[in-house]
Length: 261
Image (cartoon, rainbow, N blue to C red; front, side):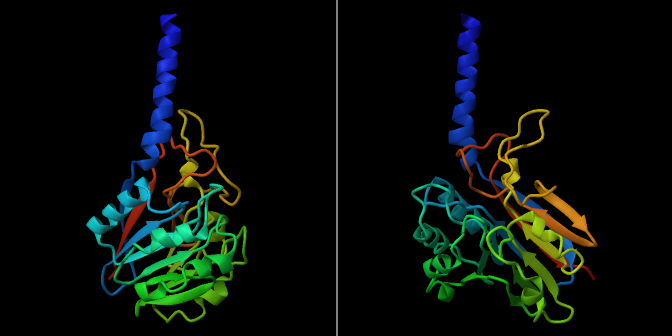
């Protein structure tokens, strides 16, 4: 009897933690890497916001960004929530509060299916420095080119188009949602940034994470390298399916690019 009660209490505590605590316990990770930049560049990498507007997690995110003061904020897709209550206007409510000197730049993910409605929701925010990239490139600085790719699951990524106008010698950064999009970019850019996996979302002891959507390939989280190009896959902020995380805290990654010579 006592054993059964103890098990029930343990399971109840784990459920409270997984649903009510860890999904809102943001984990800031910090990374330094050499790059062909003229001066240091601090990037905040966000992804998978799955936002319904300014809630508990979003307010914590804003406080963290205010404290860290990144030069640029990059969002690797899936800003829209998976909830039935989700609207594209909720994305606007959250993103309209983000600020960075070199701008806020996002690509779409598989849950941001309607590119037209996403663009409409963000209409008018460009004056606040918030920009959507769909197979487009832009100069964050004269020495840094950002290529924003469409999603492989819901769109048609075109690396050639996004990289076409990159200046010679510039540090080329590719931003996209699904990690499998890395394959045609490896060796063509100095840094690749992806998301989508949620880091597996649930990490059980001795079991490889299985909460993985299509489009992850062999990638889960953290650093990978191919053909001389490093790629970082972030765990992202939100959740998909059940609104829980276990031993896989929501992540905001801060990457400091430093001159390599």
